[in-house]
Image 1 (tube, helix red, strand yellow):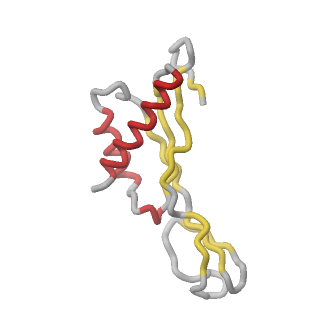
Image 2 (image 1 turned 135 degrees about the vertical axis):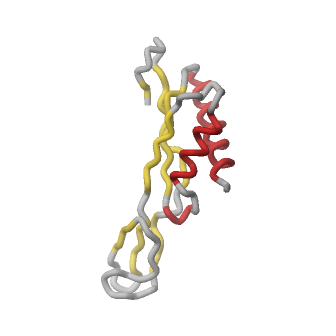
Length: 122
């Protein structure tokens, strides 16, 4: 299951951001598309395992699910969904250009404010 290595990588990157700003990490957000082959539930479980008993223990991992978005090269219709599909829902053509759905990206680090009272800074 590659979600553990992905969770470890996210933890390393968010730790670096927190250290650069000399703040405690409260949480982070990742955008995941269904074509990235990452299972959000498994990533969430892996995150909890990876951060346990570390300086990130208790930090939340928020997951934004990015839809698959395709544009039909035949009729120019745009179709979105959370399950991969292979034909245009407007005309049935299989001549599609994928615009989104492969995402696996850290989009936000939530850091404690200077007074460490837990108020996030984004």
